[in-house]
Image 1 (cartoon, helix red, strand yellow):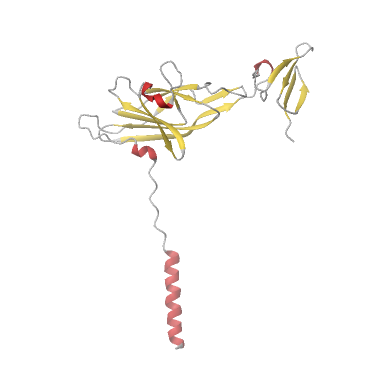
Image 2: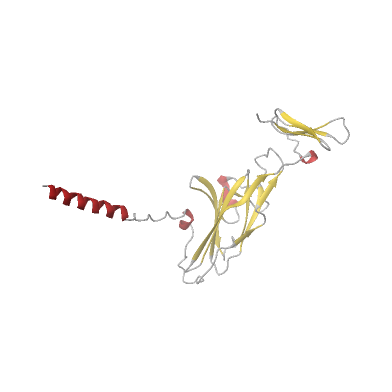
Amino acid sequence: MVGDYRYILLWGSLLLGLLACTEPTPEEPEPEPIDELIGPTGNPSDRSGALTADFIATQRTILRNINHMADNDVVPVTFISTAQNYDSLVWVIERGIPLDFDGNPIPADNLSAASVSATLDTINNIPHLVLRGRADDMVSPISVNVGFYPFGRYTVTHGAANGTNYDINTQRDYIKFEYEEAWGNQVSTGTSSSAWRLQDTTTANAALWVPPSLSICILLAQTVCWPFLP
């Protein structure tokens, strides 16, 4: 009986050792949502061969020195594809706002007014602007004008495809919309009761920057203040 128990313990130890050494099967990565938006066209009349979805933008860092922005204070950014050998393009822009030819925001219920095919999709619980089209469209999506509001960092994805190949280029936090400190006459004269405002004083070449709450002030070339947070 003792020998039987020893065999049982031996085989149990070997089994546990094998289980400990066995690596778990890696899970297949979840496909990126854009994979469903772009791919080889399969059209025999389209181009073929390798391509890269490279792009540039007219600006990447947006700085604003005002404390409160109205809903229509949208900052436009133009994205330009530098891809070659493509037949179709797609842009997926985090929280992007579609703009018309004059740079005005297009309402979500009137996206047909956009120069290229536009939809507003929710990807990973975040709204994204999706723009797409072909090289032979009347208005090619090689250059798209997109608005941003408010402050934040936004990921941009660009995809390019031809008949046999495609490429996806995702740049995280590609657009940075940030607040810029400003002093003196550069300060916004917001009308909101919670906005910072610039107030003249009787002292020559001095100004009082009045915050919405308790503040600390110092006298330099001018008097400036900033909020005091206990």
